[in-house]
Length: 121
Image (tube, rainbow, N blue to C red; front, side):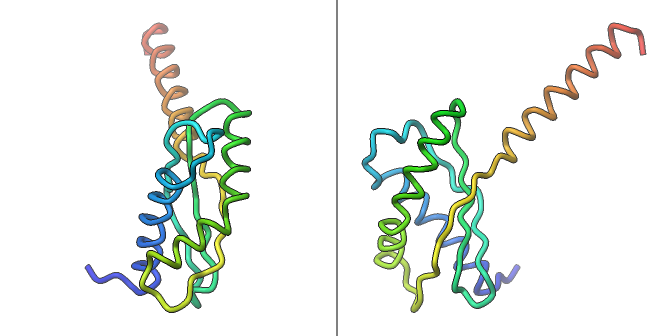
């Protein structure tokens, strides 16, 4: 299976951004593992949206998200040092809550199944 240039660049940004966030950001407010779930790159490679996910309560999530947002310049600088591409895209971050959404749906389905078994369906 052949990947397009955009897909290859997106995967490299995903891998390297994950390394930078988890290994090089030395902010004590980041607790636990931050997962880079996906990277979308525009066709002209000028902008990349990095989707991140992490566990914790709402306050921890907001704090961690703000820390990562504030480190955007550092992360982009590190991407420029580590990637072998001519132009480093502008980056932005978005929270990816699809994992929590999936877990919630799974729990609801389990509850529904238990209720049906109790009622004899």
